[in-house]
Image (cartoon, rainbow, N blue to C red):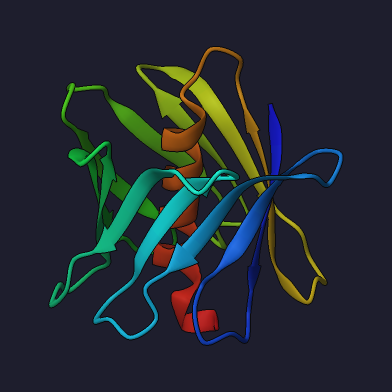
Amino acid sequence: MRYIVRQKIFSLGDSFAIKDITGNDVFIVRSQVLSLGHKLRIFDLSGNELCFIEQKLFRFMPEYNIYIAGQQVANIKKKFAFLKNDFVINTNDMTQYVVQGDFWAHEFNLVKNGRITARISKQFFAMSDTYGVDIEDGEDQISNLALAIVIDMACHDNDR
């Protein structure tokens, strides 16, 4: 399934829609505006919360937790690395994720247990941060979208 994730560059919060390839809204992402660190929630179109993303504060490098159904499912830490973006992703089910990507984090793959689960590519020359996210059939859509959002925030928050 292909999704379009478009974050506004100049906005008070990080509220945006995730669209399908035809441009229809599929999910809504809303931020908690007056909070310390990023706190985002992914909702379906009926308003049901599907995922909560929380930035951990007072860390040398960006770190985020992802919660689904109130349970922490992943912790993502950006590693200090020279000339590349590198992450440690710990999941509660011991799934091994690796992020493969370029230095600018405009093109990357999410690899789970040695198999690509999602391909993420950033569009150039857009008035917003816009990504195409291709998630393989049978893979968890929400987890992969949440990971793509976290990687974007960890790599590009200083750009905004």
